[in-house]
Image 1 (cartoon, rainbow, N blue to C red):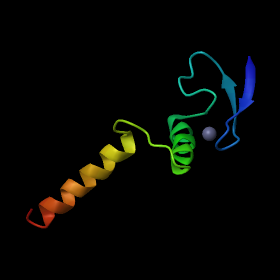
Image 2 (image 1 turned 45 degrees about the vertical axis):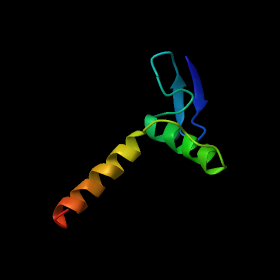
Image 3 (image 1 turned 30 degrees about the vertical axis):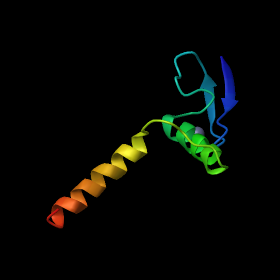
Image 4 (image 1 turned 120 degrees about the vertical axis):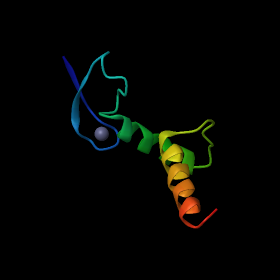
Length: 67
Ligand SMILES: [Zn+2]
């Protein structure tokens, strides 16, 4: 087994084909890394999980305010 350190949180994890987020330890760390990349002036196309969550919160706020 090959062990690597997650580029985002530096946690040691096993580099395996079963890990869809390699070389990151989790989806969260992968998204954080992509977010930092985007913050440097690049744009990510398509909706992300966090954007979906954000719009859900927004819709909930709009509903509570009566539209
Ligand atoms: Zn991590």
